Image (cartoon, rainbow, N blue to C red; front, side, top):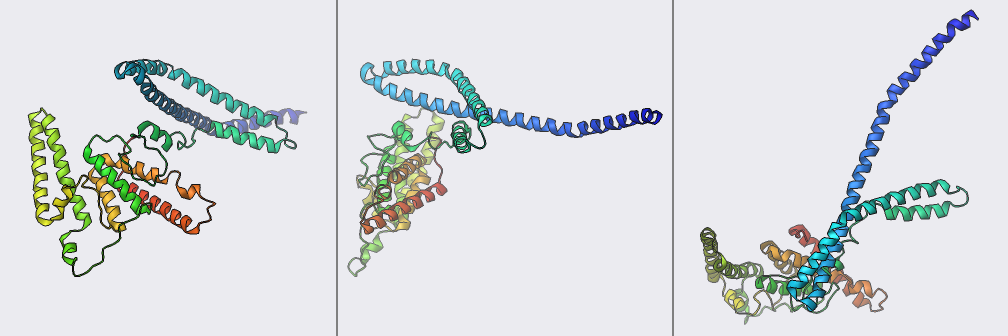
Length: 368
């Protein structure tokens, strides 16, 4: 008994020391795990809130645009804009409450998911549980792709002009897809769409010229298409600068624009000395249109050069390419028995994606 009473306090001391050391060892790890989980939740909540806000703002902008278009016919432009703005501000005031309500709904969905997982019997309802978990995960995933939210069809409804649609077309466009303020850009957009159709094979191309002794001089007289396309932009740009110069009131800006215009005119005169074909192009209704044979390289050069020099055309070019790739015949006529037609459609579809890839690597799109 004496030995027992002497040994027991020592054993208790050793056990307490072991437990204390274990708590000291694992407590920082537990705190770190709790901090990580807390930061993950805060990050998820912020991302989810931004996604909900972006989706709600997109719906509000679409509502304002359609509502203003509808009321314009009834009340006129000014009153329609005022009435639409009042409704828009009223809905905007309730945006924060809708975001909080959606967050509460997300939390409730997660809790239901956890409760349902605990109730499921491992032997009887495993298949049903897996299906339900996939559905709940799909509904509450905060990192869901935005492709469906910002689809090309929604962009088309909001920004396309002149009754243009988002689907493939085998006919040329009469006006630009987007609202381009400059007539220069409008003419260029019409010519670009024609070149895209010719590049993809959706429009019959001009046959290449046959070199003979009679037309050798004519072929030599015309410069390369790449050089002409660059040079034809300068008089059109100078013309636009003249219009802006008349509307400018600031003397400093007028002087600066005058210098820019002088440089552009010098380039025009230099190109006139090099090419007689340049003057013939300016006499056309649309100087950007080309009625002679173009190689695939020249077509790509034309589109890329216009996209680089005219930033206003970049969104137009991307929209035209997306239009020709959306609802393409190769997707609609999968069961067609005409093998030659299917091969031609696949060729067109591949060249369209190839051209879109080249444009994306050459110049960026705008924030729209």
